Length: 397
Image 1 (cartoon, helix red, strand yellow):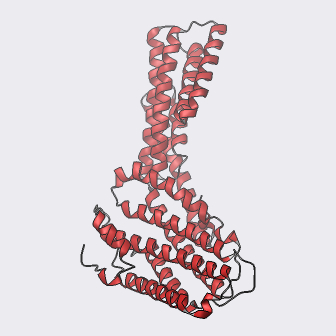
Image 2: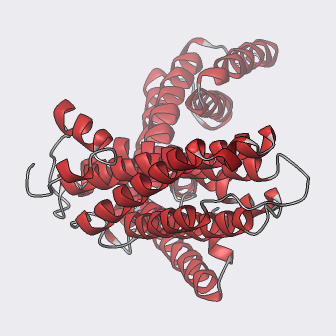
Image 3: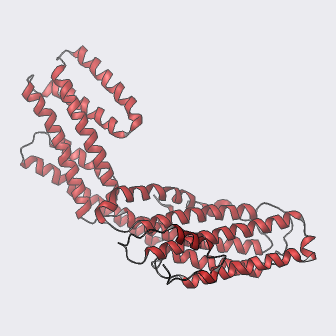
């Protein structure tokens, strides 16, 4: 669960309401599954309810779809295997014990390839053991028992998926967008703090600034995979831009960590980096770019931010070149020069990442259903835009 939910009370109340609503949906889905199985005259409505509860464990539609596929394939396969074993296995207790031993051992080994094999083993054991005690020793009765279990699983899965899709659906893509916006805001605030600390005589910063943020960026990629594989085929909303935001915020977090490493590298008396104004101006525009990437207008024209960012990079580059030619700069201690170069190069690399992300999102456009792809020529222009700001023209796509 994202740590950002606990930053403010509003997020906590929203999460609490989401869980209360999900509990209500789970109750409706389970009652629906049992009611339908009772109306159809099934004797084993328990399996429908159990399947519903397992599928409804996830809050989002993507989690429910993933669980439903795994649950149905695993339980159906297990029911068929258990039905076959029930037909060929005699009612002898010793033989039944040996079959259960082999079945569970093979299922535990196959569990390394996925949870569906574990579910299949459970279903096969249930059909085999319960069938030996509850079903007549006839081929028709045993086959009916196995098919009934598979049908009950399908009913429970269908009720769970139907409720998840139709009643207050929680789309993982929307939740991920909200988390990405919060992460960009945290990156912007952190960048501002790090640059201030560097300009204020290189005051060190604790790595606790990253508490929770790096774990969130790692979970972004997993959730993005679910959005692409599951939800994108149902809701058909644009997810290329979301993938760009996921990659960009992950690189920003890595860059922030590198900036703190450079800041905390030396523990000596602070010094004036001699280009504080240029670094401060560059950081201010980068903060604007981060907030734009995480805001609701991320797909809109960002030519003003691009122009200011390229200009700030050029100014900092020119200032650094002029400092290298000054005699006083040459006599600075080597570690101070290295720290300045490292700090500036990290900011410059982050600026390039932000410019490329801004350009990619602008190419995708503001319409969620737009499916444009960035060509190799556009990528080259985006990557070189901060070097030649005059060549960047938002009207030329």
